[in-house]
Length: 262
Image (cartoon, rainbow, N blue to C red):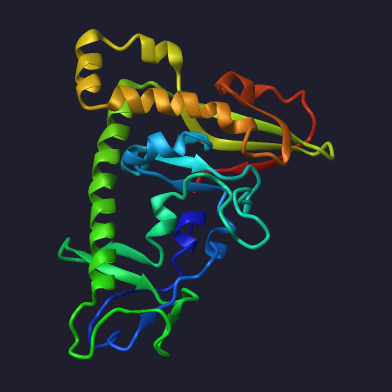
């Protein structure tokens, strides 16, 4: 199980019979994201996320997705302070939708679910009710359903963008090397970035199509965001993204190696 899916421990379909007396009390921090060194983001989030987060890609085929890096070591999230408060300028929607999520059933229908292990789930009336006394959805639940529905729609758009990049073969494996103030060196592998030379070689007709679909903007936002590798990950005195050739260099110091491969 990946770091991402670990965030959702006990997912259950929301049901008016089982959850009529359930309330959700929002927590003040994001402790549930403490162990995540990356978070999936949607294409629509690139402009905001690229301000202070490095956007990369991970996975293969239908599982290829954009991720915002939040740490270098496994189980590390440098965007959370000691009180689990987010220190960045933009909180990814993946975190904001928690503890809700859509799950696909055997009939291929999407069902709104909730992580019942979320600290804010209670039957004591604390926070927002999911259903009223008559078993009808509350406005809170309707709002969350709308938010998760929009998330799912944007996920489909994001998948199409990733398929485009994969079909054009412009992604290449990369490595992030970082040196901490105490001299410890870490390396993050298992992710991909756009190769600039391959990107520049895309034919004019495809580029025009990508311009009209805003995919060109997404590519440049991704490339620009890589400048954040050594900025927000401020436990490191230096951080650089190296191309695939650098991964074969075994002459450097021993490293604490993490991975985005799930």
